[in-house]
Image (cartoon, rainbow, N blue to C red; front, side, top):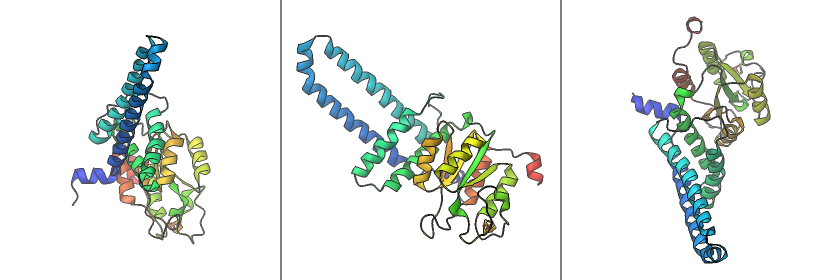
Length: 269
Ligand code: SF4
């Protein structure tokens, strides 16, 4: 029987965030060292032009360290402790937008597989959302699924309406459709990023639970911003994009945590 902590870790899917945070700090320290070296090299020349210029240079450097380092520190504390220390704002998440390409580029340079880095990004994103969960609105939750979850030989079209599923049990779509009935949650199946963006634009969710591979999840997290996206990686026993599956119990538990009290109507269905 898993402990409550073990269950939470499994449901939230935050394993791997240490890699993302560690690489972020390593990249930050390297950039810091390069900046200091550059300042050291140009300092005599700058000082010879005007005596105020070195002060301006140090002020810009200090501001950069405080903003980037401070943001990184808050992300680290929030993702590792689950404490909501992030500044609430509706603007673009510059730190995540900047950190993602930096970590993927830097981690790739160090030899990490890109997919591993993307999974780590999704895990960090989940950890940050979890820290902010009291601020999330579960008013319009959208469960977004990839088409490859459907059994490859199924004749029923579920991309426009998951209710077309005959619930034969050959794939997890049947179980997820039942979750939709139980929680009264909107569930959509998308065949690709373009359709997924259209679905999000049409439904206008307040929160998305997305199932996909690490690559699609990470681009979905960035594209959907500022709508928060919890990423749940699919399982690929037959290889990518073919008869994939997902841990439905985990999806149900996550919905339960974000929507702790399903309506009496939905319960009685
Ligand atoms: S469970 Fe639904 S989607 Fe899956 S094979 Fe059966 S009818 Fe098709």
